[in-house]
Length: 79
Ligand SMILES: [Zn+2]
Image: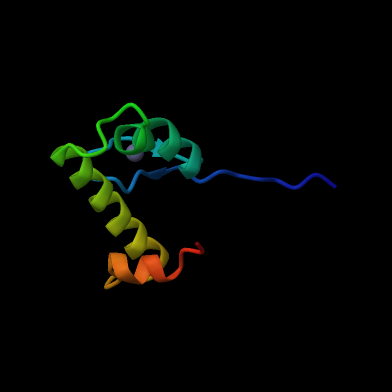
């Protein structure tokens, strides 16, 4: 029996993005990750560092809780 996998298209959660997707991970990797984490970006430029910090804070909130901090996120990183 074939499963009916109906994709639900929802608006992207990134502020300012008009994207709508049923494939959130693919959308994020294609449209949002490159702007923040591409290797060619100057890693120590203020604007790039701000984007890194903002993205990691958002990840902490999404993965842990609305009040999570970067320190909370680091506690979950295996080194
Ligand atoms: Zn988006």
